[in-house]
Length: 354
Image 1 (tube, helix red, strand yellow):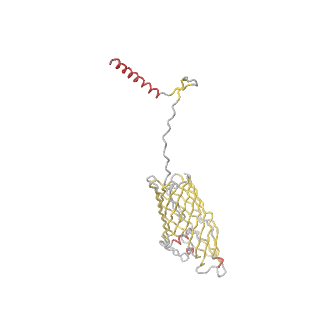
Image 2 (tube, helix red, strand yellow):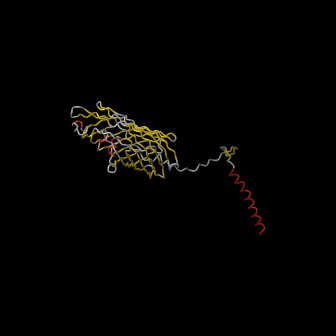
Image 3 (cartoon, one colour):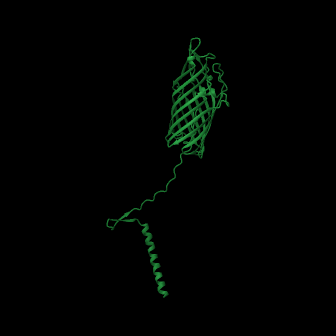
């Protein structure tokens, strides 16, 4: 009885072992097509391709996405600027205009500017034109200690602002973690601001606001650690003439040199939102021995907190620039010479083209 049972079990095992290679071969061979009647056509039907595994969404480049926004004062230079276009609307105030020499009082300025940057390899070329400036003056003294005529005490003028052009070159020293390089920017005296005052002796005074030609070389260092971005600028802000003419009198404008320093930090906890703060200082490094221009030992300091929001390629910045007059006594005077005021508030809308 045992022998037939063992024989049957052995036969079943042999049949199963013989069919296993055939099943594997059927799985490995390509499928054969059939016609409408179910008959094999002999055509080989390729197997459906295996879909590639889903790739995680790429993180945006931190350094040229969440950078601290430059603000006029003079502006911060970025270690890696994206190709971008932007439109600025700003409001600036100054409580002391005595750095103008010819008038005293206070003033406000509304500024609308357009600018952009073009990035090419490790270079970035930048430009900006303030195409509308609306300046209001509240004048208390003219030409030393003369009281202005009532009609001249409060004046408003519309003008073109000073154009800016510049270029930077930077190199990655350790990826996005550390980037260093140099920048050179100029500010052209293209503004058309003019105000006229009637004097008590019957004459008139047309005061052209500062028309300095600026040269601004700087060293640039910056980088990113996670979603943190830091930027440091150290350089020179040189204000050079040219000489002018005031009612037939030659006015020799002195050259003024400042050491210009910027330290800025930003952090973007989310893709859509970030915040930053910048500290800027300017210290006069040369003496101006000219009684017509009593500009000596000027020290300026300001802080600029900002909020940035991102909507795809679009970015909106809200920036406040606050002069630290209690820390640096020349903050008001420097704001007048730079035509940026002591305090300012800027709304910027821009689009990047990375």
